[in-house]
Image (cartoon, rainbow, N blue to C red; front, side, top):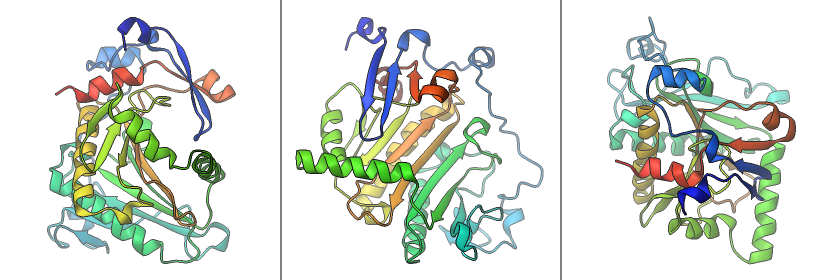
Length: 319
């Protein structure tokens, strides 16, 4: 696709996720590293200084009960603990569920993109084990795994961590997405996401692909530099990934969030898992929070994205 064509605004529709996006690449440039340039765009550079008595650091976690991955209580790589400020709890029928925190490293100042591949694999393994365990509760309908990196993305602590939110209800927009995916399957005889990855693999939005998964910037990207990772197999949830698929996806996560870290761009990473639907196609969505939604986005639900997904894919492919 020519540069001239990309400079012209274009309305794109994501029918499954029920949104219109206006790709308007003429309004902004690629990420800017300098603090002055970031200030122009309203980007807050993240403070990487060590917090005094960080609650997720090894010393402060000595007496906190948890599950360990890649070590024990005295020397662990990944630790899972209960969220001490949960929005849902298992003793409240009016807001039933569980919330857990995955501390991704015992080292303060390191982020997911900085970690070695085997440790990112450990994090994914922790997601798998906890999803499988929480799903045993028959009251749980929905499991959301998410990561907030940076203040603009909602992180309240600098220490690298992610969270699991398991609820006794399914959010309406997730039901709507599943319904639209089912309608697509009936009409076309195939999974929307299976068709999508085949379409994106050879196109200009492809970031990286191997025999197990593909990473790309979606056609109607809601966020600047948004990226998705989808396994090639039609797998319902993260617990169905095999070792090769986990390793592949871990490498793609490292490449994508590593690039975002280099540019000091905050991001959210998440995956949805509906327990009631056994025919979803699992995927991971990475949403950089470089821009702020304003009147158009909030009032009309029409998103204006000033970075074309095709240009975003080039950014991620650069070494």
